[in-house]
Length: 192
Length: 417
Image (cartoon, rainbow over all chains, first blue to last red):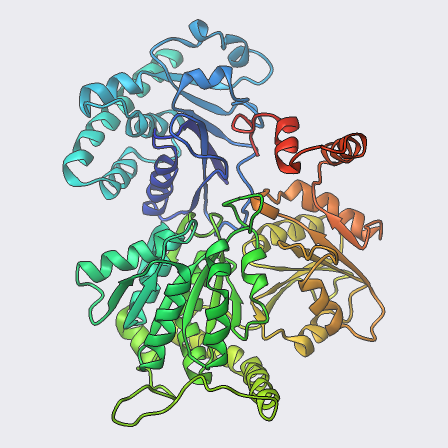
């Protein structure tokens, strides 16, 4: 089972992000479960949503306490929420940031005992360019597909198309594709 | 057709497939998406021959459902929490009049303190209103139970409440198999009412009944639910033949055959319990679980057969009977009358507190050593409780309890789990 926790702020699309991941997994013929955290959801407040993906039906209903991957939609949460709580050693972290891990002061987590696999992606900038609004969700989902290899980009795009009205969907698809390409290039740079 | 969708949306689709003629509702979290979905379907014409009636309150919602059902049409509504309490008088009337209304309860806690998250306090408060109460374990089962609910309600002329955990199910996206209209039409015949308000053939409904006949009317409503003990498994059997899925029924057992410890629970927590049962079985512990689907009628005799060989029974309850302990436990212990075994009540998941594998594992291990108190509160923060009790002892004007506890716990938005 692959478990994902998405952190963001109320209004950034944390819940719909988890839902789209589950739809993408479903489209690949797998079982998936997405659900919101049961906390206060106010615009701007820290919020979480969860997604589980498995080859068999998922019975577990607890929050995702030991994620294999984190998606962080807003880097200011680094100072407010214990984001890495429970993240498995070697787990993926996809951050919406135009800065590097070193600039964010997270290098120790990447190279220390946890060996978390960080990727930063300027998802808000990509959203401004392609969608015209600071909505980093679709870009991060595209990046997630590249970084984890857990989902095909085309399934993520199909999920985005299913979620949004046609005109908005195409803009978000463009953001997701751009983010996927960017993330794939930065992975190549690491492995090169 | 397989879909990945939200639980509320799956239920809205199931209701539409049942061809309701009147849907009346008043929005309340976490049930809102269900009636929103139905409202959209009525508006865009995909749910034809149905009136969607916006009402001014939950009391009006149930009253309109009563009127519509008495006029001979298939009627549906949904609510949660305070909404169910607000319609309480009409809830009893629907059952007393024998009207086969189907209602979804998106289970949510009851205030004060106000809380929008899941537990079973709302539907449990109406457990003796005369409605049949069915609890869903998954979104697939929630969808399936609604289709079965109309069959059961209309065959008996008795209202049915389908209870699904708020947020945990209503807001969860998971895979569901949505049947076709033809399949549902074959399973659920058009509604033929036992009683109708018809100007051409007038009748009175809701007469004043004095001591001369009140007991007999009540006896017959009990008798109806006793018949439901046979009907509910029969309808589940028919459903399995028609749709190929095991959904509904009185209860389901999981690895109980040789179990020394049997855990009993209602609703979605059963999935997590089954995960823990598998882990503990793998480590050699003889443990199993029972998921009760039908809480009213309560399957006393069948449950006795399923539990009687155990050494201990642990009932996980998402509702606290203040001053007593558990409500489900009462029924379970009644079913075991005369059989000596250890019975434990565990209050868990109140107001949306997560019920985790780790906590359940520790709990079941303690139960296995018979170390549990008769009533246990899972993951109770004892420091907070002790501090508050000490404060109330020290100061007469200690102020409101809930606010004092929140102040001590501090911000929660930054917490995980």
